[in-house]
Image (cartoon, rainbow, N blue to C red; front, side):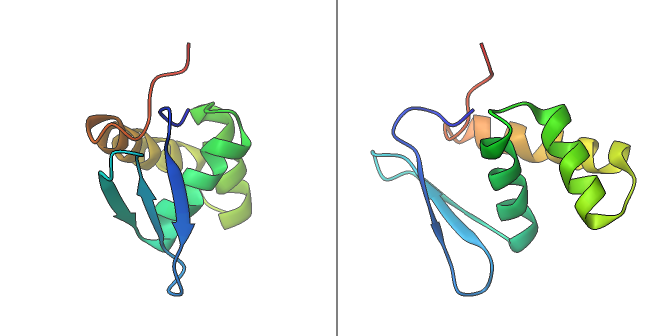
Amino acid sequence: MAADGVSGTALANGGMRVRTAGRRELRCSAVGSAMWIALRVNDGALDLAAASLADAWQTDEGKVRTAMTVWAQRLMDAGLLKAAA
């Protein structure tokens, strides 16, 4: 789930700028943006988010989950995402 005070802004190229109230930010590609949105829609449940994206992208769920796990760790390291309680 998103850390407290985190917001996202859609960019014209399909990407997003995700930032904290303290102005730390990360720019996401269109794929990263889709992952961010899928996590938000699924209340931070990575497995559900990965399944929904794999279905939408018609690709292997395991590969999406692996990519999302790496990406989510990057967001956690940046203070933008926190582990679900």
